[in-house]
Length: 315
Image (tube, rainbow, N blue to C red; front, side):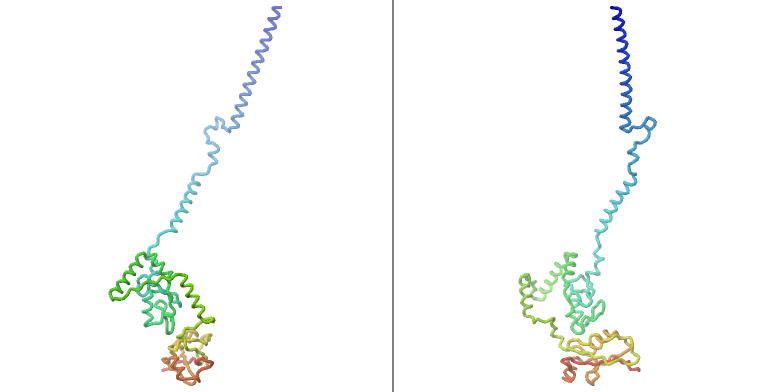
């Protein structure tokens, strides 16, 4: 029995050892499979491809593209700085200097007919001997050019902001001017908005309810009747406005210039103006004509003037 038991125990031991060996081999295989699975899951390369760069390096954008975008951003910032560049003051001189005195605007004043601007004192002195704009030579007004100028306060404020010391220096010069002559220095009057509103309302209430009011100096109403043109005179426009109101100080010469301008006449024709049966001279004023001709020259309160176009007499 002992020997049989020993043989049986020996066989059992061999069987157990074999099972352990099989178990070890299976575990080794499972370990290899696990390592392979881990290797595949992490995407590592075989040893033959170990020297190659990783996939994520290949998918990155090229360095040139990144530098290009940075350069574009730099370009935008450069453009922004260009938009805010400083402008030399000398480039703005044509817009802030008077064409008469060549100095910066003081009490900037604009002609309403052509919108050219000058210093107030300069343009007022100019209109003492001329009724034309110094820049474009347009007729501002036949007899009273000062009626067609307006202060340009916005432009004057711009000039003072661009030249901070100009206003103070001008004020000092004005003070010295009055002091040297023993005159009282005029003081600016500050008017409250409430006072201005009340004054405007009272003025509006006092005015008659009409579409517009005529200046008192325009005291002569004209009716210009065109009687025709001499043969050989062509290319002229019809006179669209034959009812006009002018100053009595205006002369027949002014009427002729008005007709020439509106009908676009050339210098090759002559304008003859007739009142009644009398051929009028260019130097005669309208007030004088109206007084001389009397009621016979009036039609519904209008001074009737007939005019025609003739060829100048040949020498």
